[in-house]
Amino acid sequence: MSDDEERVTMPFKFVTGFDARFPNQNQTKHCWQNYVDYHKCILAKGEDFKPCRQFFIAYRSLCPASWTARWDDQRDAGNFPLRLDQ
Amino acid sequence: MFLRRAAPALAKRAVFRPAVTRSFAVSVRRWEAKADPKIGEDSKLLQPLDSIKSEHDLLPPGAAPGTIPTDLEQATGLERLEILGKMQGVDIFDMRPLDASRKGTLEDPIIVKSFGDEQFAGCTGYPADSHVVIWLGMSRDRPIERCPECGSVYKLEYVGPQEDPHGHDHGHDIHHDSDGAHNYEGEPQTMADFVKPEYR
Amino acid sequence: MSNLNRSIFQGHPFHLVSPSPWPLFTCISLLTLTTSAVSGMHGFESAGYWIPSALILVISSMFLWFRDVISEGTYIGNHTLAVQKGLNMGVALFIVSEALFFLAIFWAYFHSALSPTVELGAQWPPIGIEAINAFELPLLNTVLLLASGVTITYSHHSLIQGNRNGALYGAIFTLVLALVFTGFQGVEYSVSSFTLTDGAYGSCFYFGTGFHGLHVIIGTIFIGVGFWRMLAYHLTENHHLGLESSILYWHFVDVVWLFLFLSVYYWGS
Image 1 (cartoon, each protein chain N blue to C red):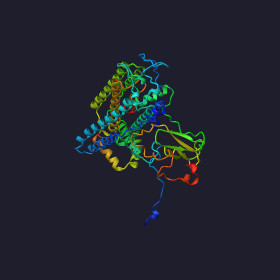
Image 2: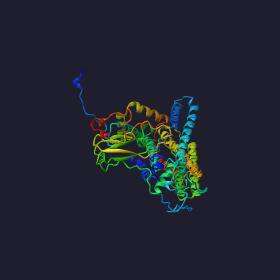
Image 3: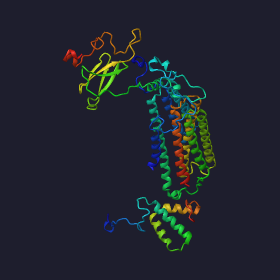
């Protein structure tokens, strides 16, 4: 390949660092938990609450875009499988 | 989780281990007095074994209506024979294994009793389990068999029903023109024929 | 006893069963039942006729086979002690196999319930499912089954002691309790807010309680047969393996219900 010298191999690192609650390969729950925590956070504290951003960054990096899009649609339609206000 | 599921199943089985003896149910006292026959008492419930000559003799006397029958009143057939035998101290099913207390010889063979015209015996030598099981087939035509591994001699003793000369077909292993043991027409030859005539 | 007389009867205590068509008949009926049920679940219309016919075939094959077993044991006397032990072992092994069957059902339930998927909202019961209050009808059902265990034990002990009335009434009360249980489960099913098709929860719930209910019905029939045999004087105070087997099966059904109650109704709500 022409631009080999620009590619560098690096070990995988999560954007948000290691989360001991989800140590294994399957990170589905990790993605889900951060999505849920973010939306619960802004529902409870408002959109400008800075610490919520941590969850936002986490789920944006972890979750496939199709999942977050589906969940956004579910929330808009009132079909989201979790009560976000509890 | 597996243990949790297995434990009750195992516990239930353990309760049942001593199959039909009343070891776990402590009901001993009888509600209505139904006395078992006493020793020496003459009772139609307890026939002496010697008086049993046919299936008909093993029909039970039956219990009174409105009561729970006891085994002696109601058991029939082979079950009744077993119970009567036990009560009179006779084990009618001799399920003991082949006698392995010694090595059989031609002068003193190990006797194998049989109700039938043929009988198999599995020799494992003396003392028992000395060698792999070698199956020997004895018949009324050839009652003596020797184990090829250890040489132990077994002899068939026929204790079954006597032959009825007017009766039906005999087993095809019984040959009439023999001397009761060997030498019938067409009997296959074995090593014994070629070694010594006494071995027949 | 002379050898001559003894040799009229068979030398060994075991029962070598005479040729019988019922095993083959049972196989055919079971095959019909399974294939018709599967084809029904895959939308074939003809199953509507085949499934009930197959059920009738299975029930009749069981009836005819066990009728023969009863004849051989009670009327002919083939069930010597050795045979009884074998039958006992057979029943125990059968119940173990049933226990393993329920193990699989519980496994499926815990697989879904211990780590609920994100589609369910990572919670159990999943969102939208109104779990049944364990301390209403299910608790009553638990009491009914435990009471039926007591009544059948009373019946059994009465039989051993020679108390015919006690034995019969104990069995009748057991049957009544069992039927009431089944009726209440039917009520529960009809008023439930969720069905079999309602996601993992619905599937697991009806899989477990449904098969348990079928086993209750089978156990009820088993005890019913025992009761009829007591009425007909088949059973003696010592030899009544059929009744003892039905009692063991009933206790097994009761234990499965207790597990169901604790893990599905109570923990799962």
